[in-house]
Image (cartoon, rainbow, N blue to C red; front, side, top):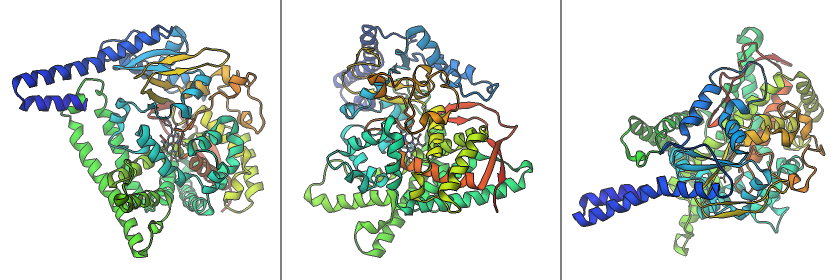
Amino acid sequence: MASFAAALMAAAVATPVVALLLLLRAAWVTLSCYWLTPMRIRRAMAAQGVLGPPPRPLVGNLRDVAALVAASTADDMHSLSHDIVRRLMPHYVLWSQSYGKMFVYMYGSEPRLCMTDTALIKEFLSSKYAHSTGKSWLQRQGTRHFIGGGLLMANGARWSHQRHVVAPAFMADKLKARHPSNTLCSSIDILLSPPLLASSFVNLSSIYAQGRVGHMVECTRKAVGELREAAARRRGGEVEIGEHMTRLTGDIISRTEFNTSYDTGKRIFHLLEDLQRLTARSSRHLWIPGSQYFPSKYRREIRRLNGELEAVLMESIRRSGEIADEGRTSAATYGRGLLAMLLSEMEKKKEDAGAGAGEFSYDAQLVIDECKTFFFAGHETSALLLTWTIMLLATNPTWQDKARAEVALVCGDQPPSADHLSKLTVLQMIIQESLRLYPPATLLPRMAFEDIELTGGVGGGGGIRLPRGISVWIPVLAIHHDEGIWGEDANEFRPERFAPGARRPSSTTAAAAGAARFLPFAAGPRNCVGQAYALVEAKVVLAMLLSSFRFAISDDYRHAPVNVLTLRPKHGVPVHLRPLRP
Ligand code: HEM
């Protein structure tokens, strides 16, 4: 698309013949992107028996998806049921019934393949395809103002470099030392494969020195104080827990990774939220050729907000630089956390400049983009995990009591320490079940940048050839609620299914045993780099809340999950808090 604009501009100043040639080329590129390539991909899939709903020109099936979702989410749910796939993914339910579990639909002119075969998914997300798959142009355009070149939207060698720089901020050397012969990617693969998740948690928790856990405890202690005050002010001690969890996770990441004050963090989150909202509106027409160059009322506001956000981040970076200068020593004095690591990396680049530093190095803009990415990716998702888990505990008093008893046994009167975390197994089972029923990220998107041949599905389901340019969409929510995978009680809250050593219904075949069916943090080398951080944080916060309050769901709670980038409760989660000790 950039070439289309460049061609138009060049045509304006060139001779008539050159101008005509440039315009013809631009027209060809546009035709190829918006018509020929999508048709080639649809034909390739149809030849393998993978069909889908008929698309309309340009809009594809966008309007169908929008209309189905609008109808299914218009009202709240009548009961507190966890059977939410039909509500949130009505198009998936409809089309998988008509065309089978693998089907193709058109998001504008982008062909999207819905893939639910868990063995194929495992293969597709594996390190074998780490460089030949990634984020599509449409996704990167839609998020460029609040993510830019940050890790979440980077592709290929650039992604690999960035991942290797930031991953150590979330994994200890100790962890890597346990697998000396593995690359970083493969050690992540091993640790985060679902069957090993429970046992690997023991190792993951030990990677966080008391320092980080200590900060999480400090922030949670403050939040508990605020919750006590808020509950005391309201009859029945009712509070909307979601907004408190959003503040708390924002406070935690600001302090542990960015060395910023709570107020600076708050400013950053508000700006990011506004940017997200405006970008979502201005991206609604991205499927129209060249629409990113149309004048729009949102564009100026987006530029202003982005400028302000980058100035606040720059100020944090400058302050970290000053701290380092005062130390007058190595980059290690930048402080702690992710920002310090990024600044050290940038410093290294300067030092290496003479020695021919690598092609992909961090500069100030990339550091800013990475900060935006981590504020965005590491805040709301964690807040949602906590909010949904509290909703589940508030409606399941037996599990609430079990978890509280475990916290009392393991931690006594003390706040949780890094050593305690691995012993909180009931709490871990509850967190995993919450992530299964209400995964904050309900879809995993990946584009194939080259032809890919996947070899085989669960139960001899056969392989599939993915043509270059196809976007694969993995409906995590539907997989997590699939009765064929989890059993007839798939829509029920049953944390015991994650008990250490528990046998899963479909783990009878070897293929199913190794399949990717639990995907709250994705899988493979491109999984969530902050997974360990999120799980440690969730345990610390929940352990402290459980030992401070008993919670019950309010009669005002309206069960209405909605999907707005992430899976959230439309009207929040009001709960009654009863303090347990002064
Ligand atoms: C419960 C909390 C969280 C959930 C459910 C979650 C989920 C995910 C998922 C599903 C992905 C893959 C997205 C994709 O490829 O499209 C992802 C990637 C990512 N997450 Fe998380 N996340 C959580 C917390 C965090 C935290 C706390 C951080 C940072 C501190 C973080 C940082 C990231 C980053 C940077 C990526 C991109 C990784 C890459 O592409 O290499 N996340 N997360």
